[in-house]
Amino acid sequence: MTQIIDGKAISAQIKDELKEKVTNMKKDDITLCLAVIQVGNDPASSVYVGNKKKACEYIGIESLAYELDENTTQDELLDLIHELNKRKDVNGILVQLPLPKHIDEDMIIRAIDPSKDVDGFHPQSVGALCIGQKGFVSCTPAGIIQLLKRSGIEIAGKECVIIGRSNIVGKPMSLLLLRENGTVTVAHSKTENLKEVAKRADILVVAVGRPKMITREYVKEGAVVIDVGIHRNENNKLCGDVDYDDVAPICSAITPVPGGVGPMTIAMLMNNCVESAHLNS
Ligand code: NAD
Image (tube, rainbow, N blue to C red; front, side, top):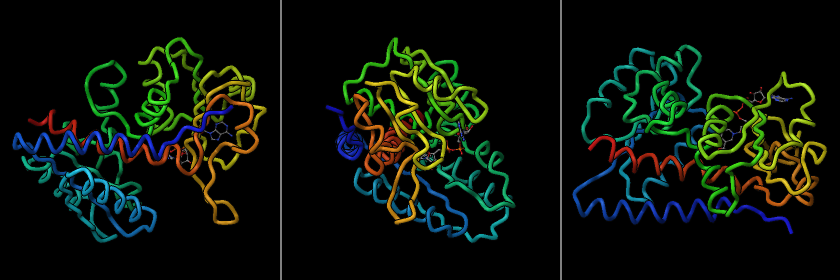
């Protein structure tokens, strides 16, 4: 029987653990505060920002919301980040991406103090992950490691194939699986014989951004399949990068969309906020 990995339940479990930790931290007078900056009013970003605020409220983390006008200049945004970097009461700073085209995203990410970089996107955080030092880890791949571990799936020694090499999912995913002693292959748009490469995987992580691209032709029987993709299909229903109905019957475990990887991203953001208190104290 295929194990359906329940990201909603695992994310709720992590949030409850964090809530308890935060309650105990408050007893020691340690408080937490996350600053969330949104520039413009992209509807998808507004939903994500709203969900982050709700998660903060649930866990007991204060959140500061900065909803800036679409025409905010890069210098104005940099000034705000510098001010938040200095504030002792702010532990984490998150700038919701994407930013309007006139703002250089890389420059904004680099401006965030790495000790407050709860998204784990700062080059220092990425470098620390690469060489196995302490630092914040990008939330989606960190969430996938939790999904695997909390579902009792062994990573050490396993063939892990990731399809996709983005900075926020594919690359950090490869480093995290390596850290867990997996044997890691990263496939991408220029990979030859993708089906054969993907079929080597005991653990297949798919982050291609193409609805239902991965059918059972890419999957070894008994593999674990993690679907990072999220799309709305023609009937306005959510689907992933994996053709779930086709693949689920032949794998040993799979994440559904929705309810798989998605809920984990926010849980791991909250985890990074809690860790930031230790880094800053
Ligand atoms: P991206 O577009 O930045 O990267 C996609 C990667 O897939 C690229 O590295 C590219 O080389 C590779 N690729 C594209 N077409 C390919 C093909 N035909 N064959 C092989 N490789 C191919 O995307 P991303 O930011 O990594 O996101 C991937 C998906 O995950 C998207 O659907 C996104 O919405 C979703 N996502 C979900 C969460 C979440 O919390 N659930 C978080 C981040 C991203």
